[in-house]
View 1 (cartoon, rainbow, N blue to C red):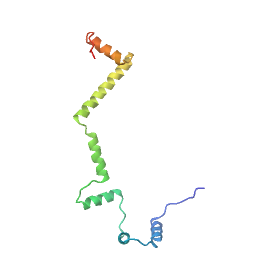
View 2 (view 1 turned 90 degrees about the vertical axis):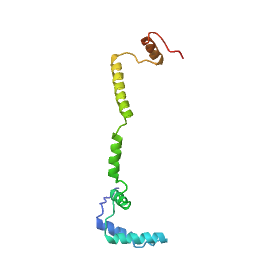
View 3 (view 1 turned 60 degrees about the vertical axis):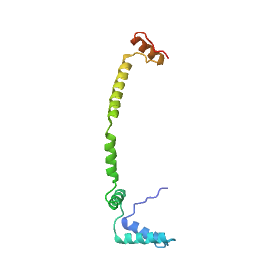
View 4 (view 1 turned 30 degrees about the horizontal axis):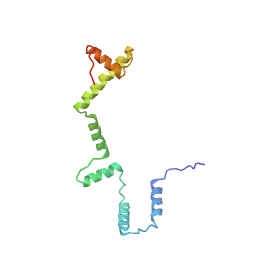
Length: 132
């Protein structure tokens, strides 16, 4: 049977965390140092950072080096949209090839296998076939 659970309010969430933290004792010097830093941060009242806020702060600490996820997404999108000359040629070629295939399919002619294609090329060259 499913329970009807409502979302906790911010105050309820804080109270629940305090209840869990009351009996906690760090076991190492590092744990103790991190625990003190956490307690100081919680007392400061500053909000926790979301992923973008965290990336911005890291970039600021690195002297502005780095991208936020939104900036990175935009840069990747721009790079994806830019095609090299070869990609442009291939794109145009693929489009022409697709149109030719569609036109051939509409003609009702049978598709050629390797031997049929070889015969067709030989006929167009005046009956001359390439020797293996």
